[in-house]
Image (cartoon, rainbow, N blue to C red):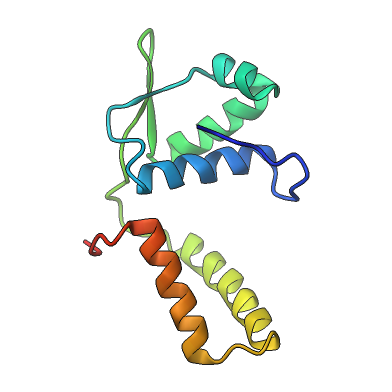
Length: 130
């Protein structure tokens, strides 16, 4: 399920986080589903267990996974916590940079908005926002 791009500038642990989030949004993973142990996923991906452990720690801090000692690690679902203002500010800055690049590529405001709609449709699969 997890595929890594070793040529990407994105760190491997972040790729793991991103892919688990995507799989959850797409419905491939659901609340309560078991995910591979740190050791098993590290072996499957041929990376160090520390890299997987770092990704799992971050996912657990974000409330997306939960580890039950002696049972394994499970999808906890999409957190219902209030939005983190710091994360929103960081993403807003990233979006600003990306939109600026699209403008330099000659896209108009409507084109950029259509791209955002396409992306949201793909991520949410047509699900209305709660």
